Length: 260
Image (cartoon, rainbow, N blue to C red; front, side):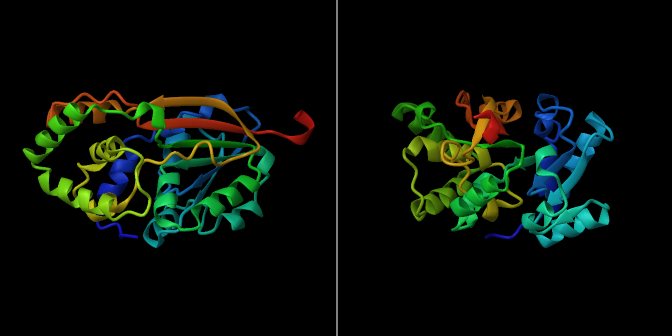
């Protein structure tokens, strides 16, 4: 895994969508009183929750990056390295597991990611809220003339070198894309992150994961969307309109045996 070179830029980017990452707050019952934020970074989601619903939740972070973990400690946030340690201190029937931009990182960096996600499933949180990038294959198709024009725009832009780096990474990936379109969409999602480019370039953003994980849960809500700021940025830089939904919000509720 490539290290984070600029933590400030990394956290600023994460914070830009903090409120949207709380999209699930008004969609769960009042008796859910604990939030476990898996991959919490510096724990900034707690700030957004404190503004939106003061004193409603006990907030618990889980973070493996040492620098970010220590940032949580310094902010007096309850945080753990290992989610197994969290389970000893919560009532899972009153807890929501939140995963913001976590699944694609697990699938990129952890060779045992699928097994780990299954283990997360088996922990039995009452609710799971996911906000991440996601590829629904039926939506990802750009005609060849449009692809060629987009490549021309990229090569004539200040992001030319990022494109060459990205193409080299994709060429040597073991996890191949189903279509060139998906690779092109991924580049449009990441090209502007110059400060941590080595890390961002190496990550595979787009996966088709939603049908394969979290069995025993019902889908209470599913929203596919693209980020308006990103759409405007792509239009400005490459004269291209992004119409494909690149992100998903997914709220899952555990199916209890007595409800089956």
